[in-house]
Image (cartoon, rainbow, N blue to C red):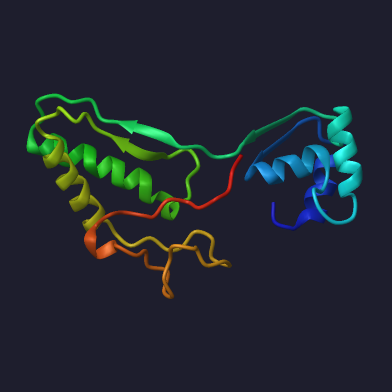
Length: 168
């Protein structure tokens, strides 16, 4: 659905809907469940929260993002194995220009793994050789994207910068 707060309020309160599911920020969730946190209606929202009386009277589920790890299990890997797994991680991270809420956000390697440096090199190579992706949120520049939507550090093959959403 496209639209602003008025369209969202109309749909989430519509009597024909039995359940609401959203993706977005914690602030969006709170606004839907409790009401606006600022401006007109903020005092009523504060009162509803204090009294545990949500504005939304139907069930809601939400995916508000996360920081899922990608855990690389050490072993004796061939060069082909290192490249294959590195390409999978790079693809996951670059899908939708990194705006994929279920994609892993951090790679965890064992400090004792003899091939950790080789894997990091394979991962850097996978990022460096991956095709450019367009900016996903086309109407709003990303805080870490340059004038043409390129990510800083691309030449160094560091991959996309982390999302800068403020989440509770």
